[in-house]
Length: 169
Image (tube, rainbow, N blue to C red; front, side, top):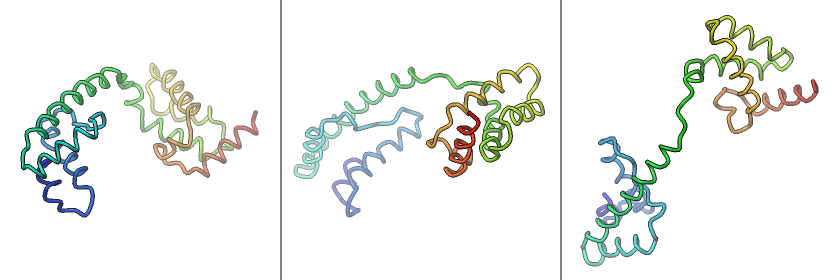
């Protein structure tokens, strides 16, 4: 794909980008990490593709692909090691968390702690109640415009809730 798509140019634009994206398909199928060309020097990529265009030689592009994949694999592994493990409590109660936050924000006149207590006491086993309540409170503290879609909220609803919170203080 990386050789033939840019060479044949089936699209008016995006042939090289499409070929680089398509180069990931066999990697995904084999459950391997993806290939990225972010750190590949533009001159090296240009020379490799020119070798294909002008001399019908794929060796330089092949070598560049291997080099880029090795870099991508090392970077991908480093990023995976840096990622934190998912919070099992958050995963288990994510629906309750979303519904609680949605209800709290869309009914700003109702006390947030009352809603939290009602929802948690109704659905969560007693041993986990304190932790789930703390989790919901923490999510409310971190709530911002960038995560509203996660909770099914509109910016206007969030603005109204924030205004109501400011008036309470």
